Length: 394
Ligand SMILES: *Cc1c(COP(=O)(O)O)cnc(C)c1O
Ligand SMILES: [Zn+2]
Image (tube, rainbow, N blue to C red):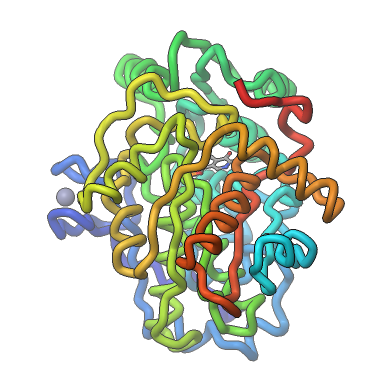
């Protein structure tokens, strides 16, 4: 794959349009917005073709032109990031009236969640830019992934986690030798502590969207969805939304593929699924707002989507609005019941966040928002085995 070279050109700000060079360490724009990586798409499109892809390894690095790593041979941090399977849920689909209901199962990625995508690409690029240690707040899966990939890269990881985060995440981070700090409260409190550590020590801030490359990793989810569908996108994609990076990433990926002509100019309707116990994006959507407000007393069994206020909320809402999508909340007991139903009828154990997307699909079909015959793809963001299988609604 000697012709596959990153076509990364610069970083730009989706809020104020400021431009920054891509080959220096960057965090937020001076206006406070996340920065996005931009590519020379004409150049990328010249080599990122269906033919070229047919000879490349079946992992996320196959989209090298649209990834930010200039020297993958030297800098890519790998643990086996396979393209994840898309699994039809025929039985559940029949029950809820969606004949073509499938789930993209991110549980098969290293560390058991799709956070591996962001960690693999984010840390590869950080390594390429000379970073040797980093800090970030986490509800769990991101910490597990960044700790593992950090170790793989020979870096020191400092993770800040709410005390209430599931125990498995403490153990997986500790197992690979990460430094862990626990705080009372929710992810926002962990974020505040992390910011303080970054201020005091000057180490690299790898918090969600505070560096531009995690999203580039999560973007590969969108590339895979398009390629696995034979370069035809589904009608509806349901995504369990916390910080929303996966949602922003899928939308960014599809825009890039449209630009280089690999898919038609039609976006799937993007659905941001949240838990009723923490639904700032849903509340904003219902108000027709462009940004969300901090959600007080966030509490849900779906720990991975307990994000009271996301830095990239405006990008998530934009992805929803521009695609004709929606945002919807589901109750915790429904999430738990749905996981049980899917396991019993399909033999597939979803994570609670993934189960939320199936519950949402059922509701949207019942209301007629999802129409007869539409192709619906739900994202199961982690292995069901990583969470507490006995979890019941509070
Ligand atoms: C992190 C996480 C999410 C939410 O991902 P965002 O990109 O932050 O919205 C969903 N599900 C699981 C299992 C997660 O770990
Ligand atoms: Zn800006």
